[in-house]
Image (cartoon, rainbow, N blue to C red; front, side):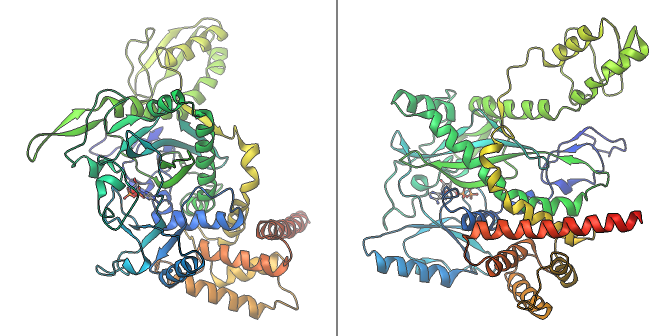
Length: 536
Ligand code: ADP
């Protein structure tokens, strides 16, 4: 901590809230620009929905959702039609305010007309979602899973998942929702912050019992009952990778606006908290993603009514300490520096200077004292031995990594889903100026012209109308009025619209992929021409 400010650059900046907590120009920051916005309930639902349009089967791990108030009438109409078609269908919905957390403002309804308009949806937009009525129960209780995921890099995409997570339990036995029990939060909502206030909450130092347990303890139990837990894990890994693939295009738009390509700037990584619900049939469903998951390793204990004390929580400690420790090991700038050791050995032959950064140094037997300014002199051995020793020193005594790489490790299985990333690359190319996330009318026209998308059937006047129509509609949804122009989601809609126009007979994902190929081809030809002209 540098309470009075620090002028010297650091290797790693650990921000509490977002990328913008401080102005950073180098090193690594533990937050991506735009991540908080991206994982808000509405933005996440939109990003997943885009992928559901393209790959409905692959993205069926997210409950059907509608955005309020924009889609209120559409929601009502759709449910009415479905109920008419199947009168035995008795759905339940969960309404979640956008930007809410810890179960704040969440309620269940049986019918679209039960949405509470008091309090003003306009002032607090929300997502309404199909309620998963048949969750997997343990000890007759509903529970969810909090998994920690490290997004180590956006370009190239690198994702790690923690081997263990937390299971957070409800404190009232579960019953399928009825009009009578809809309001019983301790039965339906698994939030720790709510259930802690139920008289039934059990603090336990044992990872296998109590209202908060390790996920591995649940898997052990399931495995003893004959459940194929490997399959459960691989479904969870697939859910995490697909969710991040849905988030990356817009994240890249935010990223370039704060850290333009080719300019010096920091790199980012981020620990995300994935909330997942296992259904009775063991299918994992995504509930939400947290950009600032709680890393507390204490819990509150009520000593007497209204008097609380913080006491250590071994279950939280077991899972969370490992996540932070391994994140630091993975982003360790010393790893890069170690590569330089050979060079130093060559230069100095008998002595090697290793600078340690106080934040990342692990105490070792060889090096007694380390600080961020001190230089330690080591008697050099042969290069191999020395580098080996340096590795041993930093990793000595540390447990094996709890964070496991899943991407690019499983990239081959998932790369076909990354089409929207290529649309984002086109959008970013035409955004032009640093600091913008919206495309102006000229940028859109240039995109159409450079990609050779206008013709006798689609004049530049029609292009302008398309731009105005879509932009106006998206801007009237009250997302972000700070900038004018076409936002990312509006561009996606316009792009899908153009793809449908041009490749009518294909399925949507093929239409989009074909249009991307077409655009990329014409831009490559243009770049080539410019290069030749430049040389000339
Ligand atoms: P918050 O950010 O306020 O915690 P969540 O989306 O995580 O909001 O929802 C809170 C809780 O509600 C979840 O932990 C889960 O127990 C329950 N929940 C949320 N969505 C659903 C759903 N679609 N079906 C069943 N339960 C849900």
